[in-house]
Amino acid sequence: MECTKVESGKYTVVLREDGIIHLVWNPHTRIEAADARAAMAAVLDLAPGNEYPLLIYMTLTASLSREAQAVFNQRCATRIALLGTSPVDRILANWVIGAQKQPCPKRFFTSAHDATTWLLLPDTTVDS
Image 1 (cartoon, rainbow, N blue to C red):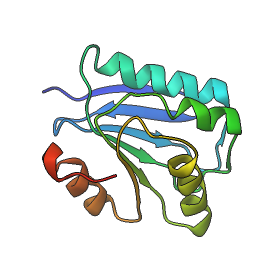
Image 2 (cartoon, one colour; image 1 turned 30 degrees about the vertical axis):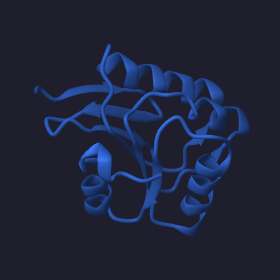
Image 3 (cartoon, rainbow, N blue to C red; image 1 turned 135 degrees about the horizontal axis):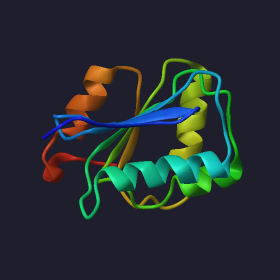
């Protein structure tokens, strides 16, 4: 599998050779609904007709609007790991995870290694 990349002013989306899509939000980004829709479109465009695990780097995200949060509840991946480092990152991730019924398993991590390990688990061993 070849590495494929899409860049925007607020994020980068990469389908890496290990089969994980990485969505990296730039630090201090205020994520609005239009940003979330564009990022999700980029994720879906990288994998037309297929779903891959998704690792979202959200470290130092400034804010996430309620409308953007709703966009992130669409089905776009087999499972989603949210990666952050601060208590604010954890609060934002918990808000996304706990807001409504999730279309796929989602978890928050502070370690990229742990997130990647979870994303690559066989489907039968992934819990939400």
